Image (cartoon, rainbow, N blue to C red):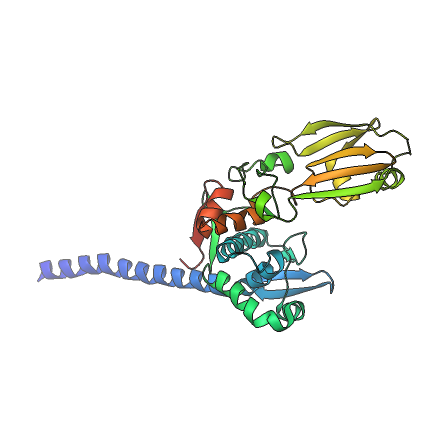
Length: 307
């Protein structure tokens, strides 16, 4: 009888903790899934100066609609959806008053009403394509070393992307310079030309007028993007020229032509991370969205909030 009691007690000691642990793990997974399903993004609407709480997947639909041309291939749209979701999840980790603003300062976000106004009678057709891209990647985000990445993206490369450390303050292992050979053939903004009068050029840059323009590039990134230059003896950062002249990138050349200044800029945007037109070029060649993402973000994994 004593032996029987000992066996029963022993079994209870083993089984009860296992049962409790199983319930706990099941509940934890359920809660995590609900978190992934019901997460809200705090979006600051700049024009209204209000903060709106938007369900995560609805937010991704609004960003995809605002950030990438609807004419792009579905696989490119899917890659953008995952990048956009990753971008905002990283912002949400910081736990501030709001997660993102709805402009190019973070990600352009348009709500249903704004999209109906933008697309008018083509709304139903276009929103279906966007929702397909978001739905087929629902919950997916980019991870490196177990953490959500800084999923930077931009419009058009110059044939290669940039090392993050050469453009921003930190070099991240997954944001390395990679080839992006597709942009030249698919992007309408691969090369942009600008013309200014000499007087206007000097005024915009806050420089005194001189009849002769002398430009010397003193520092570039490994891809040839200008970092610093000297204009008529005055040292300037390329970002200042880019901003004051409203150029599309810092990959530029400046030439005097008589009493005018001609500037040729290549690419569009900061050049770090995924090139959107490059992604579309890859999609046109048959690459899947996961292959596109793993090309532009080196060494990453694609994970899902629901798992």
